[in-house]
Length: 574
Image 1 (cartoon, rainbow, N blue to C red):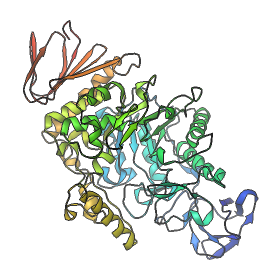
Image 2 (image 1 turned 90 degrees about the horizontal axis):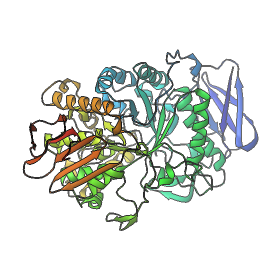
Image 3 (image 1 turned 180 degrees about the vertical axis):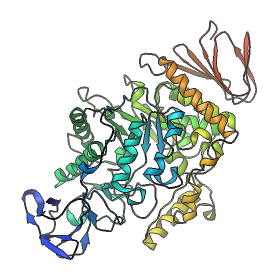
Image 4 (image 1 turned 120 degrees about the vertical axis):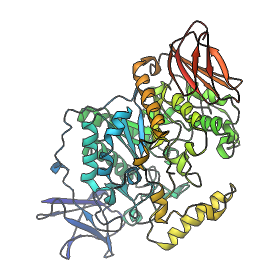
């Protein structure tokens, strides 16, 4: 026996379509819900809905789309999976190091099981949790996942529901947490049938993707419940340890009880219910402390927020790029500020926005800021998907890793960063609609033409070669100099564990940049990086713990070549 239910206040008649050409009328209930029970339906049963006699439509809450976004849905019995992680209780965000990956390009297989094959590498590296780019059902065989439309269904080409469960179970067995990137601010254009069911969208607010998701207008109670239940499903049924919420500034909510606050309340309650630590991490462009302040203090109570300012300041300092939003961090002194407090824009002028931006992060513990030297956006939204390793000398990669992994914030690495992967990470899609595919391709080329790129130099997202170029090449991991950079990351992560003052929220960070010499002091540790154009001699009174190639320690001075970094204990003169 299986009970089907769907919220569809717009149609006057809803029918349940089942395999074998069965068509069963559903019974209306209050508040726009329709229900039906089928005695012989169960795990794997294919089904769809017909609205007012129209064509078959997938379930808005479909747990599995075996044939993609436009195919029929399939029933999933979550109790059938044999979990082995009963002793897993999660892990604290404090001190954690994240590793962002894209399931489709992380391995040759491009699946959840393909990720499992490389977990030993991540354990040996020393990270604490994977952060998966979106896996909710999206159009085609491959894509970034931010145009998902089946928000409850793990992507069929990645391995579907059981594939994701196998990955999470294997991660927990290896001592790794798993955070999933979810998108609640918009849905993709292809295969999105939600407007036929009910008022899922509203023209009261507009976003870069069109009408906003309706979380505050008429009919929004059930739309909010659709999102809240989705979050609970990922955390409860898939044993995930947290969610990364995409672009929450585009969730337009005028209610006094904001959706993000309600979501945090729900997740806190679920954490107590399942007996595991659960995280909520927001991507946000407003630098608004309310996101991560506690609810008693007037905040929403999320656990952390991405701090793009940290990335921008480091990237500009290492590459010299000052176009677009990098104009906001053209002043070299923005780098020490970012190293001290993560947000550069704390109410100061933003050149790219033409206005003042942000609020001070006063009183927020460092762990509430997720920082990175690279991520999918900052690499993939370059015209050719250039990694930092394609833009700067090898020495500056050592500097970037040292500043990131000795940061008191929550560091995040991007797949392949730890060995300077030669493969780019480009934007790729697999839209079946030729008009949509052409619009995406032409729009992307127009966007980059404004930055001086020739259209023919911008990869076609629809070309299968684009996704293939973006797939990691694991054969290069052991090759020099990649093996040396990988070892540098491992040693930095071991140093981070061995010196708890790095992540102690009570320890202040002091940072200064003078004549190209960047000095960061945190507790007993001193990180010094030579970003100038000539070698620098510094006092060598403290013990040298870790140094990039070329650094020499001949007391009373330590020699730092250009683009080198040294980490030492604090001595009398430092």
